[in-house]
Structures are given as C-alpha cells and as structure tokens.
Length: 293
Image (cartoon, rainbow, N blue to C red; front, side, top):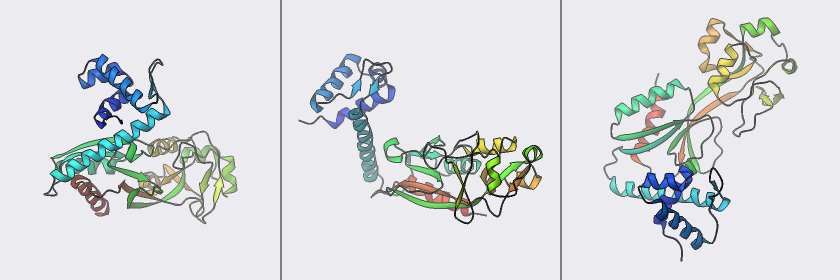
C-alpha cells in the first residue's frame, strides 16, 4: 500500500527545517507523533529517507527525490485549486519571483507592480545563480544570458552590448592592451557559464573566443562593476549598466571592436496548461515596462 499524499507537507517541513523537533513546532503537532509518521513513511516505502543521527540531519538520495517530487505535487495541487477558483481572470494570490541581485530597473518595476495589483502577494527573492523553477517552487524568474531549459517558456525582454572595460587608474598602472593576445598579460575578471564553474574564455566579436586569466571570478554583475571601477582588472560588462562611467571617463573601453558580444535578458516561467492570472499580468507588464521609452 502506498503512503498517503497527506504526509507530503509534514515530510517537506522536516527536510526544510532540518529537524523533526523544529518541524513539529512549525506544524503544531507533537514531536513523537511526527517522528512515528516519518518512521511509518520509511517503512511503507522500504527506503531510508533521513539520516537522523547526523548533525545536522542529512537527507538520503531517496529522501531528496521524494522531497523534490512532493514539492512539485503540492505545487500542482495548489495551481489546480487556483485554476478552479479563479474565473474572472483577476490577478490575485501568491506569486514567487526570482530576480538577479542589484538590478534597479527590476526593483522599480516590482514597486509599480505591487501598487497596480494589491491583491497579489509577491514573494521576491534575489539570487545570482539560476534557480530551478520547478523544484524550488518559483513561478517566474529573470535570466541573464541564454535559456536552454526546454521546460521553460522564455520571453526576451532586452538586449545589451557587452564590452571589455578598465578603470582609468588600472590603465595608468598597467597600460591599455593593444591586441587580443596582450590580454594574457592582464588581470581579466571572469563570470560563470550558467554553472558554478568559472569560464576561462572571453567572447570575441568575430564569434571566436580568447583564453584569459585573473584573480576574480563571480557571477554577480554588481560586484564586477565595483571591482572594475576600483581598478582591480578588466571586465566584460553590459554597456547599458555603465553608460555614466564611460561618459565620465571613469571606465574606458578595451579593444571595443574586437572583444565582447551581446547579452540577452529573458523572463522565464514553466509551461502549464493553466497560467495563473497574476503570472500572466507580471510577464506582460514587465515586457511592456521594459519596452517603454
């Protein structure tokens, strides 16, 4: 006999809090009762889900699989109730949003959206990494760069020219590289290629790439801008974000006609039979907002 899906919320609470005691307090149930139900769940499945003796408590591979799938089932269940309840297509209810950090234009849009839709509960998280929408329960996210996940709908919301730049103070100390090959003699800051592994290459405008090295590797664009301004090395940055620095001469372009590419921004969400009204409103309004003069 399979366990009841009613155990999913309890199991998810145990994994998320990392403790049966904490989960019991959160759920308002006796610890002993919750512990017995988790034991019974493991017995019915015939697998160990949790290493309870370890500190902190660890989840087994089987337990991690159950956790991801249970989250998805509960999420789909919630979407089903929402789909049945909402017939007037009015944006209301919870919407979970993931934004890249330190992006003022999106923050301005969020404030505008909250004012426009007071019945929507907006839960906004800021993260430099690419979140997994399905497993992490995110409704919609902003992605910088290419979107390769076939399970996601992606709408392009902007395009920006990337160029290599250095602070005037850096150029005064180390000079300005005159050729692509000369970049090997400079501190070149690097980003990640959609993973947690830093790239060892910079893009070139002819479609090829050049190998570079340097001491700073990160995927937070705001940190790269700050590091470039402070003369810590050469960085490839979206031109739209550093217009004032270029105009003032605080940052200068490096091999502009040869080094760089274009970067794209997308709003992404999971394809579903029923698109929540608050999600549709968020996506459509964001596209309109970024296309406005």
